[in-house]
Length: 267
Image (cartoon, one colour):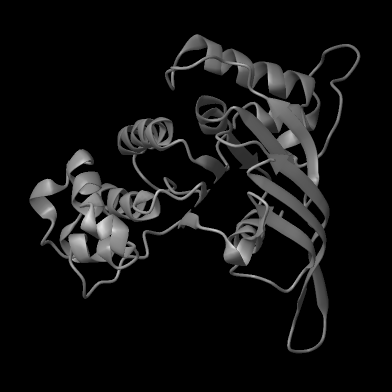
């Protein structure tokens, strides 16, 4: 049994005026237990909508989503959003305890995770006293505190300075390998996807669907700036030069750069 099965036949948003916008259509994929799957696609391709549906936050769609055989609404799922979403009136430890189960609190999981993340001295601090990177670490602890079998992350390191983002990527990988969760990670950064993922799912412009399922094929551990990560990124763009725009296309016969390829080289 796969950890995640997604079949979104159609997801439609309707404006107050009655206009319809199709966010996703014929979007299907599965993720095996313990896999780190990255999702990449252009803005407006429905990546965040997909995570909302998988998490059970959005139930108004045609199709089905199951997590380890259970409907998404009945499954235990961790979710880390683009922004930390910490409660400003709660200190660090209480922000994590807020979502922790009684069993997790009894086992001291909130304290253990925050200590591991280097936040042991900040348990009583409030979010407005933390840097952006520290707030993301609290959010990451909150996502992992109940040992969810499935963890969803929606561009969690966006807008951070690169050294801070890289420390958080390494921390995420350490936690994933320790906890064994299945991860679905949305990113706009192809290098990040190659570094983190076992596999990359590329989505089309709206209505979103999977246009390429690409196995990364690199062993672990790997480093963010190692040559093999860059080689996979270049090979992927060479073989699928318009894929970051959500278009499945083959390179030109003469190997010359077309406009889409020229644009994607800087990605």
